[in-house]
Length: 259
Image (cartoon, rainbow, N blue to C red; front, side, top):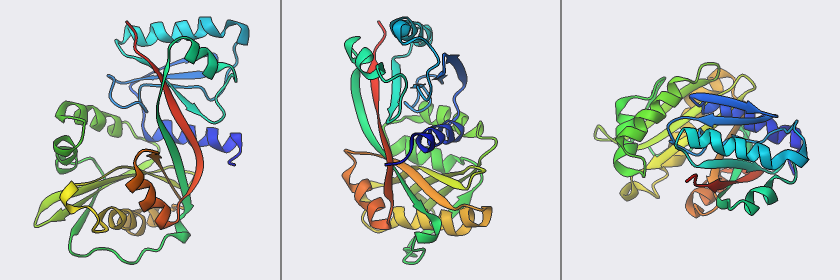
């Protein structure tokens, strides 16, 4: 099991890799807000708790009022070492519903086999989220054009970590995407991995990952790869496990819609 200190470091890495628009700090909890797009950017991160556990209900009410003022649901990201330990029970007693159990997977860059790239497709590496990248995801995923613009705002706020965007193409048309964010500690975070359904099972996702590691991450000092996969996404989980990635920690969301 990954030590608590390391899990909390990963939560900090994630906040830097996916920066919100507004932050509010309450007794060690970090509240994040950005127009309701993505749980990662609109949830409470309970890394530490410096408040009085006897008054936890009051703190939760304050959090709910904060999200209500933004007309957003209240969502807590519950990693394995959330604080205080009574938080899960307190939230469930207030009607919070669990969603999207997720694993964070990790591996050393040196352990990734960089061969076997599918060369039937071309791969572009960009240092910003270009139109082809956002348009592809807006067309084929659950987030529409407006939401993709908000996500572009998020990626534009990535300042300290380095970032890149990979697009897989066939005959000039985008059919796959992948984002990489490399922090100063040598961890490259992989997100926005997508392949158009009819092109899946052709090693395009793994090829994009190898391209970003080989042509960008290693050159910039990457030592480790990490990403997050929902447990219900069995195909993605199998892909990354076959590449050699191992579970570092897990988490889930607790959500309550504010009325």
